[in-house]
Image (tube, rainbow, N blue to C red; front, side, top):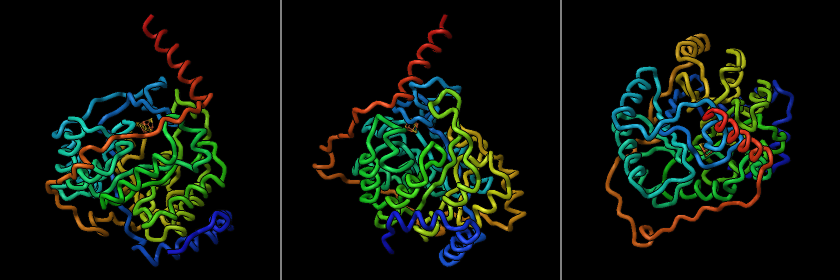
Length: 364
Ligand code: SF4
């Protein structure tokens, strides 16, 4: 595994496009079956009301967006969603809750039951629940969790322009806790938030320097949602997505590059180029947490056209067997201490004020 410098990653990213795709495709073929693409389903098990201020997110309680909020789903609801997901070829279910961090409470105990239920169905279970401590990550692992998603989103520098309610180091600490629990790591970012190419490459450098490198790296195109501070951002040109996918593939050769949010604004040809450049997973279902996603029929048509086949569960790693976890006294006494940065993002503050006014107007 080599250590990439920022200059080297920038050089890869800025290569003539077809040369870049060719090189990425060559790396992809060396480490992966190029016909296999994993279909995953992202299920929002608790939607909206999040205390964080991520500028791109319609689930942040402080913005005024048009999403249907829901409390934590029941075991039965999740089981049904998992059955439906399996029926459409998904081999991974990713459950997302709009939380700042996991708390040692009844809701966490319930999530552990959800994880066990889906793991018993022989699906790869992933969770994205915000920041986690090492002992919480261990409990998730023992419940049968396969992967934990926690995106870096962008570079450390640009992160301060997007989120003010937590620091970059908190993200890295969570990834480290996930690793200590022997879970696989899923961490990537969002393209199109106004960041520079350098920020994209810096994020890839940070991810590529993790040891081991993340098993999954989702590359999302921003879906600009009305009511969020990024609502006016233009769609990312497909060529930039192709560059990002290809560069990710080259600097992290064995990872599963996941072509995630934003596919509704990509053509079939654009997505095909992303698969060529090393993307080997998509998310299925008409929604990605709260934003639109292509329907499964159009995805299956695309698979047929391109000769792609869905990847089976645990093609790369063994299924985790659930068992009781015994925490040490120190782990039981573990205090959760995540940072609260003091900086403010003017745009986020403006949108917070506007949202308050809109809510008042609605009441009147
Ligand atoms: S991205 Fe996650 S942490 Fe940020 S506001 Fe949305 S739900 Fe909360």
